[in-house]
Image (cartoon, rainbow, N blue to C red; front, top):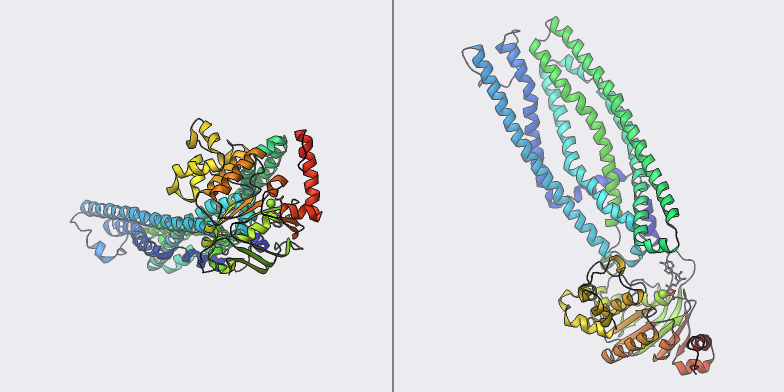
Length: 621
Ligand SMILES: Nc1ncnc2c1ncn2[C@@H]1O[C@H](COP(=O)(O)OP(=O)(O)OP(=O)(O)O)[C@@H](O)[C@H]1O
Ligand SMILES: [Mg+2]
């Protein structure tokens, strides 16, 4: 898991072979949509072909129709044949009509080319977003407990957009410019070879500058992305944790911290713009020099009669077709690098292990609720010691087990192993005799209800939050479980009852109410094994007892694990496991443990004393 985290971090330290891999991925993600791209390329070819013909009309008009020189027309013969007429005005009119018609055809094609490209890129982005989301859903608990939300959100939005923009607009633009430059050079060479060479003199300089620039931009873009991700994460965390910030009167500090992150981001962005401006201005000058060169040499050639006036004007028009696109190509190389960074970052999500593919069992046995841990040990990958060591126990169907122990002793970890949110390294956990690693994860989790220590409520109504596991069970069943979880009375007192909207992270509910909604949610469907991870800590003792007795009635056949810090809750259980530093120190019924006079007895004594003082009355013993 630590590896996954490192992978996420390293996404910004790009390896050398990234470009090749990114290009392969770019094509792979296109899936079956590539015919649309081919279609837009075909349009593109035709559009460019027509565009490079336009300057030849000028040459034809000047040299043939107006007879400024006796050089023949360079227009393709099939077009020359269409420009007929017995007078110059008629021929000019025909040429104009033909030119406008060709331009009309070209604009229609441009429309269809754009449609094809947009359809293509939107389809690919749609598919990619769905894949990313599916992947995020299927990635293990460990990944999610380490990944930064802001960073993931940025990858799923900005990076997807950078990729979409590249395959939608920029690839086409690169193809368009390459075709335009290629065809133009070919047409120029038909007119005059030497002048063609002269027109290309400066291109290597522009390309070299572009390549140097391309390298610089790549590194800068990486920095900008990383800085933006930091900023997004900060905002996201502070919005979610607004209450904590307020409680500690930490607003000024957070604002200052954001200001610093914002400054770093702005500086890196500005630095990028500065380099951009330098690129544009310097290449502008070079392009202009190239233009002058063609102009001057062209005039000399025309005055010596080496080329006609018509050819000269065509050359000037063609010069624009290669000089500016060359520079544009340089810019696109920068964008290409942006896109490869984005693709690389996205691949780091798509490339993560899918927990349902990588480490899944294939059995779906009937689950009754017998649980057996056999010498189970577990260690977090980034930890130097075992969080759980050599745990063994047997729990029979229908038993209620209380788990108590100091904070950090490993109680939550123990239960997370049972639902395979975490994977143990040694030993075996059996559910009804089948090792849980052989059981299909969905099947296992459908049979074990767990209320996590930190319940999360979605931005939906209370009813939907309870019925989240099965939207078909809304209505009466929701009310039933709400009663068991002792939350029904609270809900009906809300102005909108079950339709009350629960804000992000349930801000409108109290901690205890949230816990009870989470309990109700779990009870929606009968489950042979139930786990309450400190789920009653925020409700008062009376409600706790009320919930547990309702549970006992409803779910008497289920095996129940209750992690608790409240000794009176533990007392009611059939057996109690006392966890200490990742091992089960004591286990047995309340009476047995009291007799043993160990850790449990100590906790009991301390809590009884506190309760005694609080209630100002009778002791528990
Ligand atoms: N993702 C993690 N990576 C590394 N160590 C972790 C991780 N989660 C928990 N730990 C460590 O594992 C140990 C056991 O944690 P666990 O959450 O199981 O404690 P707990 O008994 O449930 O405590 P509490 O009563 O406070 O809920 C702790 O020392 C904790 O710091
Ligand atoms: Mg815990």
